[in-house]
Image 1 (tube, rainbow, N blue to C red):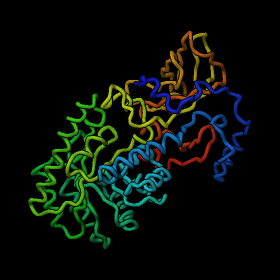
Image 2 (image 1 turned 60 degrees about the vertical axis):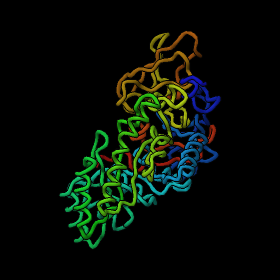
Image 3 (image 1 turned 135 degrees about the vertical axis):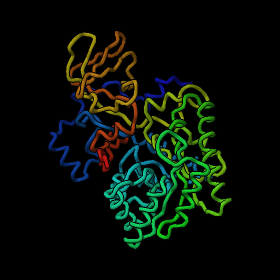
Image 4 (image 1 turned 180 degrees about the vertical axis):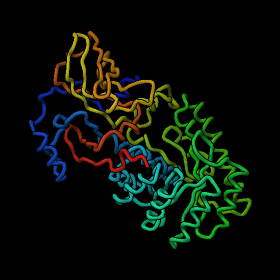
Length: 408
């Protein structure tokens, strides 16, 4: 069984250090012009990219997509991956081409950005509460009537109904269940009462139950994670049955995560999976464990950040141009250098990271470029305007992270 470090290395043969002078000496203006024109394929390489650079290795990414899509087909489950991971229409469209039925969006701003990029069949997994979000939800539903909006409160459902009536629309609603530690109505009787309220309204329809158990997605150890997810999703299945026994049709039960995709797909009554991080992977997910051991190895690491060594203040240290603003900081650990045994990263501030160098590793020089595995992929992606999609050493495309930084 490969070690966790070997797993995190990603593609075989990935270089530990890229020399600073390995690129083609394009000016920054040259690179920006090529990106603006969409003329990068066959011209830009990994070594040409200005740092810090967020890169996606396409071979690993596409293998991850194919694996998840094949799993969903084999288990007869629909796949609606969560776009909060990537915030990128091109990636959502690639997933739909592979068989996904649409995309989940965490909030209305993400849904708007995805829709503007051609993505359809959107499920907004957080409630659009407040007049501005409601206005935007109606605008999206007018353009894309198949959109599903989440609700966990009867008064909010009534507000959606009234707004839909005024706009001449009929909205699709998903009842969000509180089976985790975030939003939702309590499963069972309270969810049934909300469903009855929705069923009585004229300008909305119950399209789904949305169930996300955040506490299950990163539960350590496969058997422990299985128990946590079965307990949580079991409440969702029971609630759906309760609604149906009460004469309220519920066409769809959707939920789950990367960590529980192979657990939730075995539960009778769960129709659709919402994984996201399987696309990229990160240090956090690598630690949750799989059926065969302590490393979660179901999907390959495809997302990395390239940084440049900008200072060598001592013989045992180096400084790179990637700090708090280049990596997520919401985990108790930072990024890890890729394929550099014995080299440790520590935070050096907003713009800087400090490397503590071992005695046995390769020499690290000023201008060298080092790749890092990210701590948590979703918030790391949100720090960047673009993602460089690489095929081997060559940049095949540059995709805009269209919904990055959107707080509404």
